[in-house]
Image 1 (tube, rainbow, N blue to C red):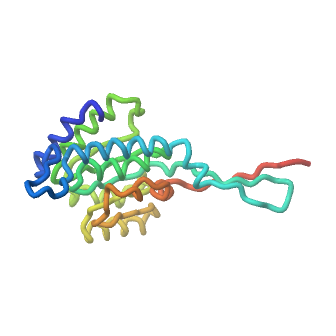
Image 2: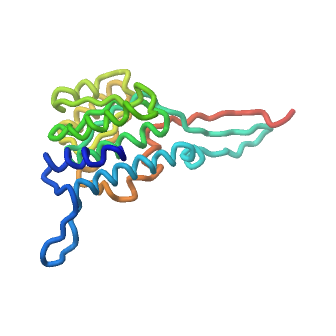
Image 3: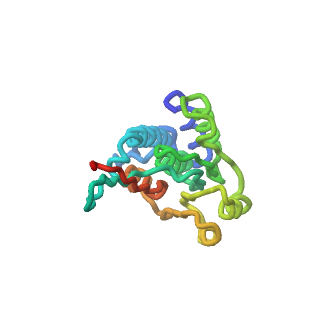
Length: 220
């Protein structure tokens, strides 16, 4: 992604109408966020969740007190295949923010890119294909939500869904599918502040792990 900064920024600005670089107005008002800012924020978010990858277990897991000659641990494990439905805007930061907490805990992702601007997702897919990310961990789709969301909702091999920026009708479809096959569905608020530090919390990882409790004898 670092090597594709310019290409990503241009792909965002060309469709979303955002300036490639910051520009202050003549009255000295604060600068507006640019597409380059969105790319930088997306890269920082990837770095953040890369840092969480070997630490979230200590935050979410615990050592449980028990009465007996045992140790009792609760540890987080991956859920499996998680579907991600990205918002239309921000096309890159929204996609990355939904994918990163899912894959850092060992899950695989099938992601649906922004419907109005899928180009940054295609460039992001190139970065995934040429980095050290194992093949098959991130699978990116482009297309219409009306056609694909019903499949995400009903597919029995999808264990959870992480979505943002979807309509109320699409959210209902996703939750109805969960009622049939018991997958977890998390739909983020449409007015979410994507640059907020809350988007980098281990609380974003927790919905996509299963807690496993292990008993181990401590003595005879």
